[in-house]
Length: 97
Image (tube, rainbow, N blue to C red; front, side, top):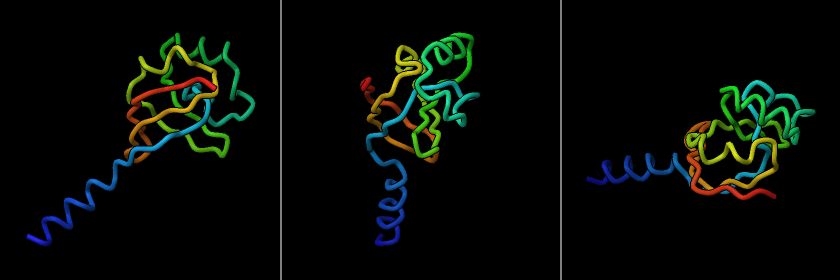
C-alpha cells in the first residue's frame, strides 16, 4: 500500500500549476528573439494555421493545449496560469501585460 501511495504522489507531481510569462508567437518564429512582440507577424502566421506557443525571454518555448484561448493575444506579452506537463501548458487563464 505504501508503494502505491508513493507512486501516486510522484505521478501527480508532473503536472504543476504555475504562472508563465512570455510572448504568444507562432511556432515557426518562437526561437527568433527579434519576433517576440511582433503582433502583426504572430497574428498573420497564427491566423494562417501555425500553432501558437508561449516563448519566454530566456529562450524556453511551451506548446499551448488550448489554442482558442490564446489566439486573441497573438504577439503580446502575457502571463498564463495553468498546469505544465513536459513542454505543454494547459491554459487556465491568460492576461495581457
